[in-house]
Image (cartoon, rainbow, N blue to C red; front, side):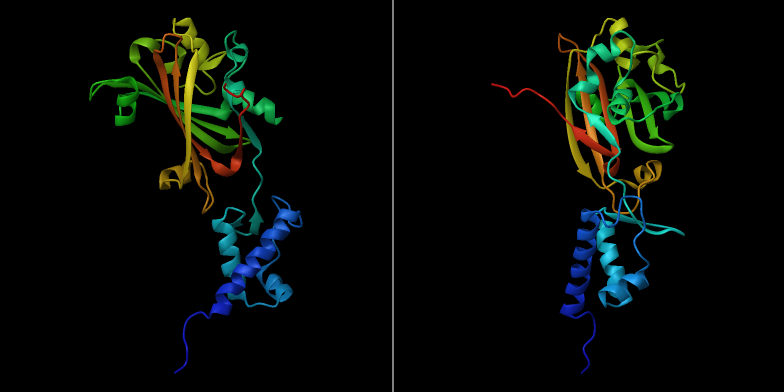
Length: 264
């Protein structure tokens, strides 16, 4: 009886080809933003069939190394263009006196320009979800202000960030104004300070997962790219929570940098 399905050599063949192409990308033979040779050319170069090439390219796509672009071919993904700073992005000297805000500090550190329309937002008074209720210690059904931002770099979305505030703290301030751009000089932290709630310390939690369909669409993500989820809690010196925020970041568009002194 004739055997059907893939042979073990076929299955190992595409992995070996993927390894060769992966090494070529790492060595810089195929630079970020450039296109791999046509599949027929790869098949001829490595003496394999087109099916093996397609499987190898598919494997590299799931690893986040390449992405197929219509009418261009298989493109090597760009390395993260943006440095997302750790503690330095929240330095008080950057925002307390109305100089800059966190996402602009990232741009400056990355040598990237920015303009007012790089950040757009919607603001609404909404019923707090379970995570927000837990963070603030609120009763079910409590209302909070939701300030949802989308941040772009050179027209391409890099991340979304949604902050939740107790209404009595931000009512009537620029934090509930949906106009594009930061909420005035110094951003939200400067406004909270003017309201008598100066940020003093915070905690951030980061994890990775695959995006939801809505996240994939809003961040314009290629197939196989995960997102980095950040939750941030900002407190006053007396431990009053004044902001709970959730960020969804395109994994390939950031490198995360943290500098800190080692604790005793």
